[in-house]
Every structure is written in structure tokens, then in C-alpha cells.
Image 1 (cartoon, rainbow, N blue to C red):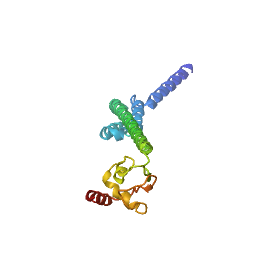
Image 2 (image 1 turned 180 degrees about the horizontal axis):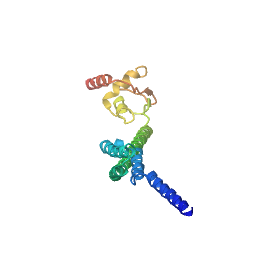
Image 3 (image 1 turned 30 degrees about the vertical axis):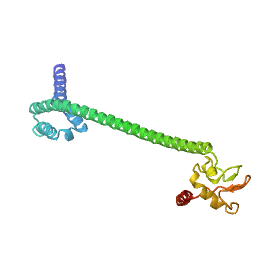
Length: 229
């Protein structure tokens, strides 16, 4: 009785061991499955579409052998091949992703450098505009100041003159503050006809009007008249 029981226990243990071994399936299936799924998540199908399709075909062929024909050993050969190709493809995907990340970083750096350069150029242009505006304002202010000083420095020309003893109209006209030109005396004479009967005879104390806003034609005519006399 005990021998039969021991035999039954051994049979049960062997059956359980065989069932466990059968449940584990091909050795490379779990590894290749995880790696193929990971490549799918890492955009391998987009970066290397042909290689990824070839990998799937090998893996699916192993799946067919495993599930349909129940050929664990034959399926494991395809699973191992799929795993090896998946490792190579994973390495290439990582390299491409690193390259794309580096290119992206470079583009970001170039855009940042370009933005900084444009900002510096705008700042320089604004500074140039401010400098020109300041220079223009300084120039206008300097011109106004110069004009003001010029007006202040210019002597105020008299609009009247009091005759001194012995003076004549040409002498009065020749004075610097009058016309500085003796031939312009007829202008004074014409403006003061009510006081001057004879241009050759003046009286001390007479106050003559000194015209200032006469034209060039009037000046030329006065010189011609003076030369005739």
C-alpha cells in the first residue's frame, strides 16, 4: 500500500513539474516580447519603419510556431532572433533620439542667440536714436544760444540822430552807427524834408529820423543822386 502511494506521489510531482515547464514556454519569448513592446513605445516604427516591420514579422512567426504549431523549440529560435534584432534596433533608436535631442538643443540655443542678437540690435538702434535726438536737441539749443548772443552782441542801431555843430548829411550818413556809407545821405534827406530846406546847411540840435527799412533799389538811387551832387 505504501509503495503504491509513493508511486502516485512521484507521478503527481513529475506531472506538476512537466506542467510548470510547459507553462513557462520558450526561453526567449518573454525577453523579446518586452523589448518589441518597448520599441513600439519609443517610436521605432516611425524612425526605422522597415526594420521595425521586419522585426515584427520575425516575432509574429515565432508566435505562430508557439501558439499554432506548439513548437516551443522552433519558436524560441525566432524569439531569440527577434530579441537580437530588437537590441540592435534599440541601440539605433537611442542614437537617433540622442541626435534629435542634440539638434533640438542646438536649435534652441541658436534661437536664443538670435533673439539675444536681435535684442542687442534693437537696444543699439534705440540708443542711436536717443543719441541723435540728444545731439539734435543740443544743436538746436546751441543755435538758439548763438543767435541770442549774436543779437545781444549786435549794437542797437539808432532810428534818430541829433545834429552836431559843423556836421553835414554825408558826414552823418558815413557814421558807423548810421549807414557807414556817405553816399546814402539822400535817404536821410528825404525822410526829413520838413526840417531840411538846404541839404548843405544843417543846424545843431536838429533831430533827424534815420530810416532803416529801405530797399536796395532805394539805396542805389540814393547813391546815384549823391554822385550827381
